[in-house]
Structures are given as C-alpha cells and as structure tokens.
Amino acid sequence: MEATDFWNSIKAKLAEKGKTQEWLCKETGMDLQSMRNRIYKSRFPSIEEALRILSVFSTTAEEFFGISNEGLKTTISEDVMLIPVVEQAFSAGHGQFVPDSDTVTDYIAVPKELRKYGDKFAASRVKGDSMEPTLFSGDIIICDMNGYDGEDGIYTIIYKGKGFVKRLQRTSEGVKIISDNKHYDPMYESSETEDFRVIGKVRSVIHNIE
Image 1 (tube, one colour):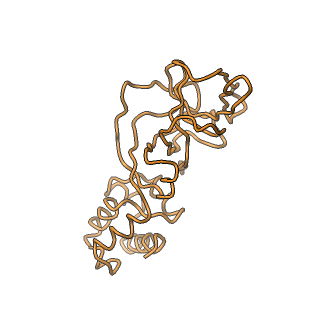
Image 2: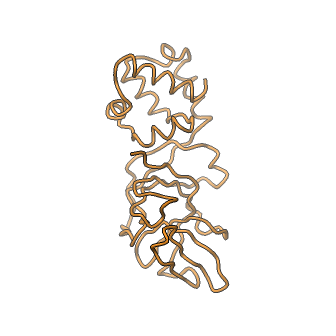
Image 3: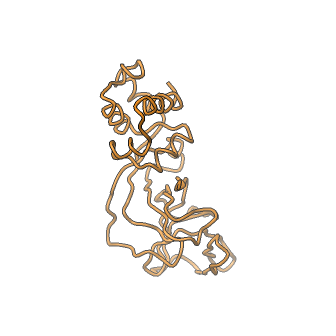
C-alpha cells in the first residue's frame, strides 16, 4: 500500500460520512497543516496518528485496508520517522525570546530521507515576515541540530539572545546574516561568539495553508 492509497481511502470515508479534514484533525488531535502537507506530498502519517484515524472511524487496518495493524506499522515505519515539535518559535523578523529549555509540544512524521543529514532534528514554527517569500509566518521548519555545516543556506540561530531563522552566507570577513525579505537589512558577524550561535540548518518546511 502506498501513502496515496492510504489518503484516498481516508478521503472516501470522510466523503461517505459527510465530514471534513478539519473535523478529522479535531477528532484525532492532528495538525491540519501537517496533514494537508502529507497528503500533497504523498507521505504517511505516523503510526500513532494512523491508528487514531482508524479509531475515529471505528475500524481496523485489516477491515479498512486489508492488512494487519502490524503490516500497517511496517509500511509506515519504512516511510517516515518521528521528530519533536518544540515550543520555541524562530523569528523571521526582529527576534524571538529564547527560553532556558525547549518544551516538546508534539511529534510529527517526516520523510526518512532526512536521516542523511543526521539523527537529531526538531521542528518549530516561523514567526514574522523577514524570510518571505521563502518562509511565511506559521510555517513549520524541520531543522537539524548540527550547527553550521560550512555551506550557505537557511539556519536557525541565536543572535544576541534571541532566536532567528535566517539565510547565512560566508564572506571574507565572517558571516552575513540575510533576510530574504528585502525590507530587512543584513547583519554581520565575524565568527560564532556568545552573541551569535548557529543551532542547525533548515532541511525541510511545511508551509502553512490558509
């Protein structure tokens, strides 16, 4: 069974009951934005989410898809991995306060292909408009926790005590901290210091769907 088959079956069941994706998310505790992104990209939900979906419809994997729960778990585990969603938002603007410790608010399923970047990831929301049109307020970014990898790209950083998501570009004098929104001026740092620390690189994004 492919992810497309999974979601097509769910859509058919929703249509049969006269229900919406919003209703399903409310009943299962899933994030609507994340669900729609998985449907669009043909990705399975996590096994926990899949079983909650089946529970809402008062059915089993065998009744619904013709495979056992163990078969469903195997199919999904080969496609996705779970990573934590942290409470900390990263500013695409004027900076977001960084707490002493991050609180995990949820877990989301992401493609296993991301493992090529390591095994430590976290997801968090973007706040502000300074990275438009690349990132928008409300988007969920998937970031590794490996610090600066030596290449230009979009990173989560701590800058002067605040959390940002910015594009970093190496220069002859250090690092240029860039906002994709041209209304924001770039910032400069000679190297990583107590005022400037790179958390990790953004490897994927789940765009907010209005």
